[in-house]
Length: 369
Image (tube, rainbow, N blue to C red):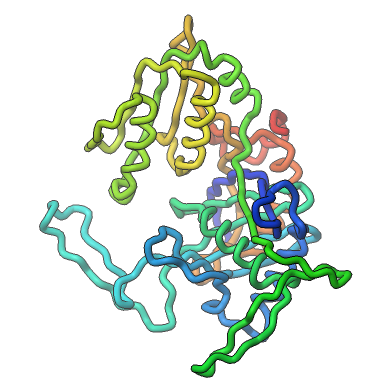
């Protein structure tokens, strides 16, 4: 049974992709993304590989990024739809939760058992337009788009598991086998040493609006921020504090207790470089999932007009008529087909940030790239 589903699509350009010489990011030695994704597709389906063996890295215990697995990968012509499964934190094979209505200090922690073979987590969807060097994240009910996990997943795959990797197999004392990478080899048999895998995405922004702010940085007189912190996001309050302290140029500890709040203060960048740092920091920290996660500027002589950064990002909401399977995963064939037939609009258009939830307007968008 089909149902109408709202999908939020955010467009990124591929900033780095492939295998690079260490210390030299100018050009990839091996940089054909289609080849790498073909390799990934072959690897995850090789010998009926179980999903639990499709993670490409071992996460550090003190890092936010946990394991990422390949749930599915499909290809149409040069494009791919990759569905990843992002592991959620657990405690001794139990999934902890508390009641949000409990009083502070009095909440009981409930532990739901997880079977030994189960991996708690959530899916994320990525559409790769390899010829256009762009990636679209497709978000449905989930608050995270999994971009950081994807970047980690692919760069580790490039360097350790792609078809370019040359290795020898070594048997350890405990009987286990270990692959010793000897280098990376091209089609002509040339062996390269000391390469590193890289994959990094960058939000596509309306260059005109950003350039306008940079050109007029000396005219900026006020800065504004809207934000909405959920109970989960309170755990990451330091990100808001860091940005706010930088704007106000002070080190005071900020303890915001409201759920929705706004900041308005007089502000003038000391130079263009300072403004660039604030723009880059906002881009890296913004969840992009909340209309309250926004930063704006007004100029001298017209402080009533606010230039909001969220309106410079290529993303929008679309209404899709696609199926969910019994596992609540959206039909990947249907989704890939829809994305492929609308990719020209997504790759060459300025997807507005104001939601319109209609496919009829997309052909009118024409400001990006």
